[in-house]
Image 1 (cartoon, rainbow, N blue to C red):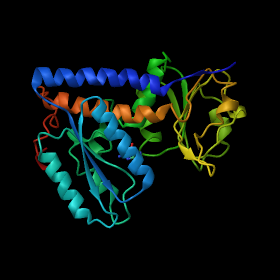
Image 2 (image 1 turned 120 degrees about the vertical axis):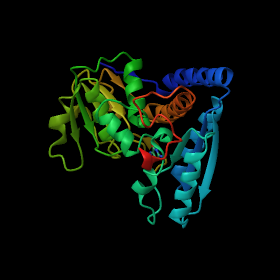
Image 3 (image 1 turned 30 degrees about the vertical axis):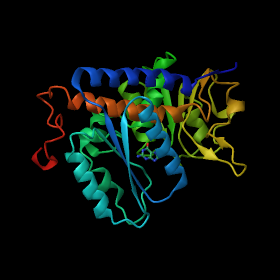
Length: 302
Ligand code: GUN
């Protein structure tokens, strides 16, 4: 068998074109232009490239994006005060703090300062909780992108064995919740898992987000599995590869995502989609049963 390749660039193009239409509709019908505030601290080169890609993708579909750039030794209070201002600004619909942050920052105090209604990365506890109970507001962009890829190629998730390799807060854990919400049977493996292969071999859907190049080899993959590679690793040669031995595993899987050009572009696309969703929600009548429906209600009053 030779796996069909899931083209994340093509799926992204389709969703981004829908995004452009949603922006045009918001402008025409509500006189609202979605806007994303991006905060970056320090000079991590990979983070700077990611941020540039996110802002370019936003602008391509008509979403305004504004960069707030801090030096590596920035005082965390300055960033927290900026977040307060952005929370209060009705013209800002999404706030993204690029991770990682320098060591003087407490990541959680920063992420939890963002109003849940502007938390387009889906990292605030309110949004994490929404994911747990199946009432998501903003889904974290990478696992959300994976779900969209599965949907796009028509993979039925319900009843499938899904195995996730990697238990991070950004990818592995939310991925498990999303697959569970769609009635997959889910296992999460991580760096302390003994005999990884005994789990991965059972997977109908295998999602790998471990950050270890070549971790998944053909012997670990069930024949006909759908293999989603979230890894982005730069080899000493400069080549970018995922966590899956692509050439080997494509001979065994039914579908596989390439790296680059698989999950990566979807992460950016879902961030843009979430930002537009935030603008759609902010300009619609608030749902009566949802105390977070209006971003202008201070958190402490909820
Ligand atoms: N750093 C690595 N991945 C992400 C992400 O999805 N969002 C943010 N804000 N930072 C990241």
